[in-house]
Amino acid sequence: MYSTTLIPASSSGLAFASPIQRTHRKQHHHVRWHCSSLSAASGTATQVSTVPWGCDSDSLENASALQKWLSESGLPPQKMSIQRVEVGKRGLVASKNIRKGEKLLFVPPTLVITEDSEWTCPEAGAILKKNSVPDWPLLATYLISEASFMKSSRWSNYISALPRQPYSLLYWSQAELDRYLEASQIRERAVDRINNVIGTYNDLRLRIFSKHPDLFPEELFNIESFKWSFGILFSRLVRLPSMDGRVALVPWADMLNHSCEVDTFLDYDNLSKGIVFTTDRPYQPGEQVFISYGKKSNGELLLSYGFVPREGANPCDSVELSVSLKKSDKSYKEKLELLKKYGLSGSQCFPIQITGWPLELMAYAYLAVSPSSMRAQFEEMAAAASNKTTIKKDSRYPEIEEQALQFILDSCESSISKYNNFLQASGSLDLDVTSPKQLNRRLFLKQLAVDLCTSERRILFRTQYILRRRLRDMRAGELRALKIFDGLRNLFQ
Image 1 (cartoon, rainbow, N blue to C red):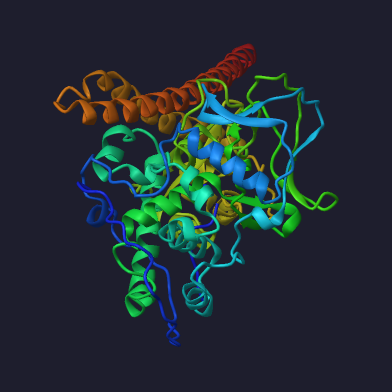
Image 2: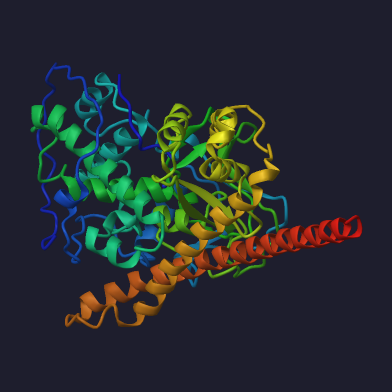
């Protein structure tokens, strides 16, 4: 049975091969997913190879051809057209007045790519399905297979309109991740994602592709083409609630760009039998129409979609704060075992928003600072720090609340110092580059990183302010109580 963690969005180009005469071999291979090393596969090169299909990210010619093909294939007349836009390079712009609450798109299921879509090479699809390949790697392989058939594939107009290089952290090298995201916890998420893509490709190659080289030639099915296909999936695949959560690529609809101010999303409409979204505001002709990619932080948007909203524009923004047990704690081993019991570790990250921090972080802080005399409460604290339990999580321990808040503040200030160091050094990060092309790439990546770090540091500054104020008030209250107690004691002496 398959398992995969890929569930949510070089110096030379990929050699292109014409479609190959392929035969079906009746072989069954059990495949198991695992991760391999990022450094071994991605290296430190900053020059990025691209696949031979797709187009430039701002190409309108291919997008127009896609719209024409979709219309001829059953897409109803649209109130939007694809144009160059400020946000996203290409986007769907209103061509007529659009009312609030109006349903748009109506893309029929026949024009949607799912795991059940028909393959131009049925033998290749049969091999993957016989091996029970999950939906994400199946669709990634499907995209490459269909791209290799060029005009022979039903989806050639769609694939031609896809970006040749998706905006994705999959295209960042280990050196670039270390250089530009050293202060942000999103770096670890990016490394994990790249490792999972590489590991998934390596398993497919080992267990299936190498056994059927006539169906999956290495000049087509290689790590570069899989970075492309997974980059497309991470940035464009949608989960449709009304179709039992099925994942799908929805041509035309995936040209819509994200806005943090919009709440509407894609779904299947049983009445019209198409993929639609309902506008949550009116649009005038010439205005870009937006949807929501989900309530994601700026880091998550960079991870999957390759952009960072302007500072303060994303109400769902958060930053991962790293906290750790102190190994000098006399109860360290006991606390660590209890954390492991509830799926946590000695070093853990918790999301902090501008509005505050989660109860789980407070519970972790209580456990971290609790003395041995509170051993009876250790498990209760560890359970409350996990989101895998129904136990009441807002339990308070007044006797150690000040120490717990100070623990969070210390972790917050340690993180702020990393952001400060990066942002102070960012001005001179790219002075060692002589190639204009390489310099442009580095400047682009650096600007993304600076925007991300600035937005994440803003949340940490706010958290720092709240924690300092709360601790000051607590200590002022304790001081007042102490003065009153001393006064009463002197009175009775």
